[in-house]
Length: 261
Image (cartoon, rainbow, N blue to C red):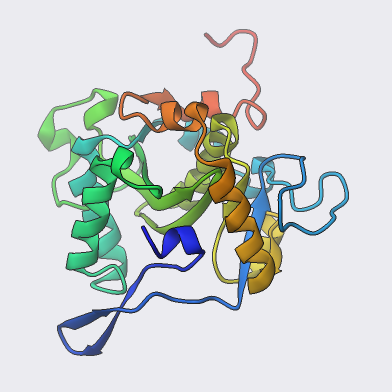
C-alpha cells in the first residue's frame, strides 16, 4: 500500500533460486492512456482525443465476445485466475508471498488506500482443455459463473488512477478482448487514467498511450491520492459485479443489431 500510493510499483526479485526479496521498482517513465477528456494534475496539455483510450483500436472479435462474460473481484475467481497467470508467467516478480499480500488486500479494500482489482473473463472458447486440465464438457457446468477463466487481469487503483500489474489468457483473441473490455469497464466505472507501465509499441498504437517522465507521474499520483476513490468506482469494484456480457461493455464496438435480443 505504501509503495502504490507513492507511485512505486510493488514487486519481488529472485537474487537466489527460490529466494525472493521485496524490491519495489521506480520506473523512469510510465505509459498511460486517458479515460476522460478532462486534464488531470500532472498530465501534459493534450489535444482533444489525444491519448484517449478507444477500444475499437484493439479490434476485438464479436464471435468471441458473444461467448464471454465479465466478473470483477469475486472471491471464487481468485484461485483460478492466479493459477492461469502463474501458468503463463511462472514464479516471477509476483511470487507466492507477494500474491498472499495482494489477495489479503483484495479481500479487505476498506483497510487500504490502494484498491486491488481482479478482472476476469469466463466463457466458451475454442480450446481443448482449460488451464486446470479439466474440460468444460467434463464439468457439465454451463452457467456463466462456472465457465473456464479465459483471461484475467490483476491491477490496482490509487484514487482514480488504475495500474495494470499482470494478466494472462489462454485462447487466441482473448488478450485483446480482455484489454478492450477492461478499458471500457474502467471508463464506465469512473476511472480517469490507465497506467500500463513500461513503454511498448503496441500500447502506443492500440491503447493510445502517452509516456510520462517520473516527475510528471508523481504529480499524477499526488493528484489521484487527493481526489481519492469515488463511491462510483468503489461500487463498481464490489464483488456483486457480474456476470456482465462483454457485448454490453463493448457496445461502441459492437452495436446491437435490431433483430438481436
